[in-house]
Length: 302
Length: 243
Image (cartoon, rainbow over all chains, first blue to last red):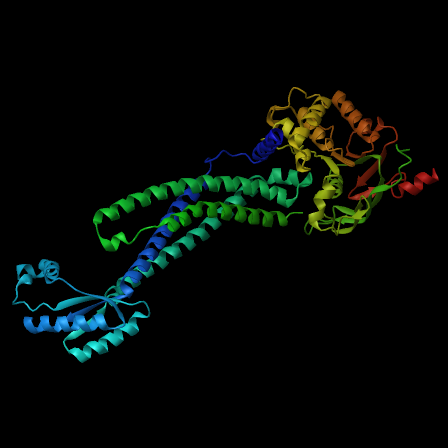
């Protein structure tokens, strides 16, 4: 067992000697490292933004706010109570909770100053509504009709509508990141093609000798694909490590903002696992591209 | 009279072979001959007569522009290129310019055909060491070609060509860079291989060398055409039977 392993190791060493060139000696591993770094960052952005949009949609899709727009405070309180009761009885509503006027005043204070808490300022009463599962828009429409029968001063706004433009922006950015990943993949493939062609050209003498001794195209292509695969592995690991370090720093910065919205832009376990697959995919891409390129080049010779 | 008269099988057959590079006139024209398995053949002719081109056709580095070439009984002109490696492994070649892989040691250069044939690494050491010692380079195994003299490089090239025990050995001017003593030793090696059944084809200008091999036949190329002074090359089996 150990002797066959030693023999395999000796065969691998002999293969390496056939195509000289130390690891990290040429530009190829470094270019792959840069490509991998950018690819991982783009993929991470795509995954995190996608997750944020999903979380936002899940969080907001089933929620709405009912505003009681009434200048007279007494009438407003009375109407708010009746509305709350009606909402809690509606089949579309899972929960209805009045927003504490003090909390509302706190939220308005940055814009309205201390007047936000004044009774003279006609601030609408708000009721947070959580809808039962199902198509939110249809339920909101039914509730709008219900509220219309209670008073024309009642308005219902689904939360999703507020953040629709933002979700659209995040989705677009996510797709942009996916596009960048695709472009980086194509560019990596092109770099490997150029590297494989250059390696093939610079070792043409050795290849001719091997051919004339009876080497098959696949045997020769294997020499190149191993070498380029190793370069891609080194570059990929290097680029991945730098990208992960960068992502961790960005994550810490996002956390430091304390923003719920920015906090939603995060990677879960699946996201990290997908990112970890990128160097593996990079090596596979490099190996297969190198094999294809060299086989094509060899196919032109006798 | 060639050696191994009992083995009259034609291992190489050329029929009306022509070779043209690009739009130039034919380098080889209407070349027809057969080589018997186990024979020893010298190919001679002036510089530019087409010796190297003919050898290239023989070791499958080139396809002819026309004609038929049969090796080991199969037409190799129409053979798909995926089948060529199998044929090439049965042919050992000593190139005029040696074609040693410059970044490999003498040992690794000689081991190449065995590795190409997929031999296990542990089985390679003994034959390579034997071959190094056979060509008198037992202590130069780790030397790179650049550090070897012309003669030493040539011996490495010869060792590489014969280590796989080829059925045909093709050598292009194998004694061009060695002294008379070494030339004689190389010839002795070739004769030893020939006695083991390998068909030897040697391109050379060296007439005294040719005269040292009794029973060897000579092919002479003149301006791309085969001049067969004896006629015995064209139909060797029949001519021998007639002898």
